[in-house]
Image (tube, rainbow, N blue to C red; front, top):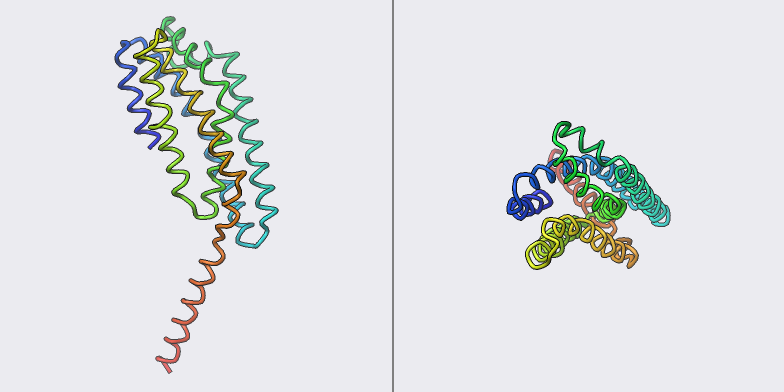
Length: 220
């Protein structure tokens, strides 16, 4: 869903010419790069939270979730500040000999990078939801982020305001912040603590045990 959303955004960007497309390509490379540690942290959180919920340590699972959210927000905010300061040099790494693209990519990067912390927060909390087996909610949140907030906002700001291509760039941080806040509200609500996998697992174990016992009698 995220990849399809980025593809749709590209169709909006093409309208503003090859220079804008090249600027977006250079900037989006860095955005995709910072997603790697955020996704890794999200998977680690899902593993640890799921393990503790399975062991009945709900409080500890909550502490791990909070720590992971703080780390995700702090880590990506720190990377965002670094990216803001060194934006021209980072863009130049991908397009070293094109000053216009470096200028455009720097503009994109500096508009979006200070909201990376909210993207990290969102992904880490999604890991908590996946830990309890709720994989639909992260999918719905991604759909909302890409197709309900980001794409419509990018279209409106770029077509119906004087911002032009800058309107597309601003749609990225706005979508990240709003989606992170929605995710945080759902996390604080605490319904994820009630979705225990242990009950489902025990039913499956009991079913398997009965099948084993049944097969044992049949063999005898």
